[in-house]
Structure formats: C-alpha cells, structure tokens
Image (cartoon, one colour):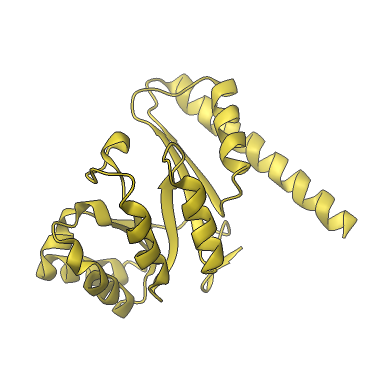
Length: 196
C-alpha cells in the first residue's frame, strides 16, 4: 500500500508527533525544519493539544508547506488525550480529512464515532488508522487477537495496537503476535493473488 510516494511496510518510518509546540509558531516551525533535516515523512498532528481550534486550517497549511504526510489525531480524555467530547470530533475529523495535506486520520477503537470516521476517510479517498491503547498492561494473547480481529473487521486502512509492557515476557508476547498477524496477512494476500 502506498501513502503518497511512501511504500508502507518496506522500511520503518519515523513519525514526528506534534503536541504542545502547536501553540507556538516559532517552535513549531523550528521542529518542522529539524524533522525535515532528519528526512521524517510523517507528522502526527495531535489536534487535541491545540489551544485555539480556529487555528486548525492554518496549522494544516503550515504542515503542508513542509510536505509532510499528515496523520490527524484528536485523542479524547478517555484515551489519554486532551479533547473533552467525542461528538464534536466528527466535524473536526471531516475538516482534517478534507485538507489536501492530510493523508491519514487516527481514531480510537473504543470511540463511538469509529465507524463514521472510517467511512468518511474512504469517501474522501484517504486512509484510516484504528488504534487501541492499554496504558496499564499487555493483555493476554487471546485478548489481543480478539481486539485485532474486531478492529480488522471494521475494515480500516491500518490497525494500531499499543500496550504497556511490564515485563520481558510482555515484549516477547507482542513480538510473537506481530509475527503471527504478519504471517496470516501474507497467507491471505497470497491466497487472494492465487484466486485472481
């Protein structure tokens, strides 16, 4: 899958996450210039950190001027973000997706508007990431696979799972499950190719 000129999965990509510097234009531009010098391609724009939401278009324009692939994220409080309400986010996601510099949006699996955001992204011919976070622990293998399957069945462009590793065993579990999911994906892809 390609995002702009980037072949996803070919090599690891660095993502610059913009938070508090969004409210200081000089600091923002300084960070963007530094990121460009490091050959960063993706910028996650954490809209929930924006103190003045009326600056949304202006910030998107600035990010576009630097030719980054923008990931728009509006994390609610229940997912560790700063945005207080779930309902108002759908309007903001639409504004973000309609901007020509935006390539992806990231929406939480537990959000009430997850299906609407996925469909909106598809309608506008952009990409969606559905993410699941557990900031306290790594769930069991069965729980992780269940979460993955539920998200996958929503048909987003990408699935993002993030867990807190409290032990080396948690790290090994994550690595092994990632390998299993990748192997299963390759088998499905090769089967579909054969059928075609």
